[in-house]
Length: 195
Ligand code: SF4
Image 1 (cartoon, rainbow, N blue to C red):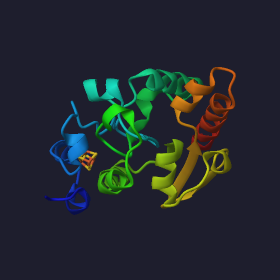
Image 2: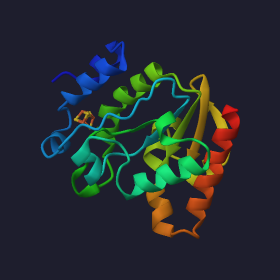
Image 3: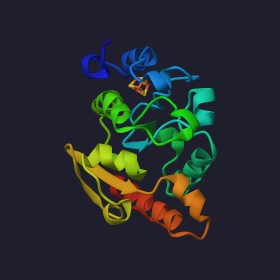
Image 4: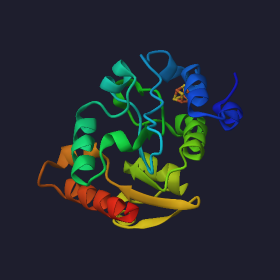
């Protein structure tokens, strides 16, 4: 079976990449039950690229990234930071929903990452926002703690990277929890860096 690593880098446009990714069946456990391959949202001229973990139930149903509860919270915190959702590119490391919303396996992350790597090249954003552990590990290429990496922009492939909490963590800890406050603070830093 042809691997994303063989195809993705040859995609010369986002339309081509979306079309190719939608045909991908490299991860049998994910391809078997998915409703959609959720490749992402790519508004023209986006300077911020937000990367999450993997689609959930609502994303799988609609084919759109971050449209469930986490997505609604993401919309709110982006808006409050002065980064309307319509202005940012959004995707996830893994493009197909893992069964029962489990964490993607290492093999699935490695298989799917070439799509994301090429999205990054084609979107060419100024800042990448990595939401949560899986996106952070894709960006850093190693294990780390979100709490230790967040709160500052760091160099990343000739751009800048902001590691921060996934909105699902902010939901889990509630409106007065530290992850939501950190997520808001980190997006404010991103917005300020764009000015
Ligand atoms: S998760 Fe990624 S690599 Fe796996 S089947 Fe879906 S698109 Fe292909």
